Image (cartoon, rainbow, N blue to C red; front, side, top):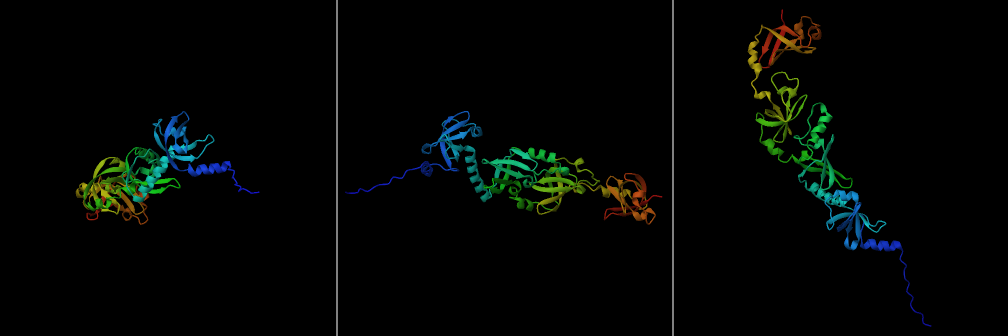
Length: 357
């Protein structure tokens, strides 16, 4: 009896069939292209050709409101096969994945790009670039847009930031981390280009024009050709300044003199573009003459007295008659008294007073 060769046939399980299908079909996370078959209230069906049919949920249809039957779309596979046999797709994720490819390339090259913030919070500006959401922190704004406000008023800071919504800003990508979905922009880094050349064009003593970007207790911030400058409160006027906001306002264009140049900031002066009234008023005050003045400051070593709008003099504690005299007991702030001019030091801009007898 001749025995024939027996062939063993392997029985395929459903898992085996699914494995074979996925080997030639889709995988989670891959990007696919297809054509919109139909649009329904809760979903859109997409023809993926040999790879089957995909379904896009309603929330994603709203994301692309212009979607219509016959449109070519690019989507990301979220789940290879649902219970109904369709593949779950995401248009938003595909856009974001493509966006990250663009972002990574730009971050590597250091290219300067244009962005438009869509919203703001007290920490900075919210950005969406190529479908990827990012953030521009307040600390990374250029000097032109940094919200310089008095006493760090949070409401005013937010108001300033909101004014930048939908404004085109030039930025560089400071940090791009696809894995952690982190994208940080910097306007400060973008404006550094050409900054050295701009500094080379200016010098101490130059008169420059700039726009006031902020008024604070200690002075005024001004932008001069993209360079930040500070007019200290002592350089606003020859007269005593209590509140810088009484002299300039945000948005105002001013002319100022450069009195110092730091590595990234200018020190400016308004008063040095004006005649020094101290020199002309000085002629009124001769040694030995009597003057009337207002006590403006009281210190342990004496009192400062305003004897004209631009001239402040000092009466030293030693002129009060007693060795242990206390200026705070002798004078009252803002009181007017008669004094005698003891010394005039024109070179050092000092006038010494004594009590009038």
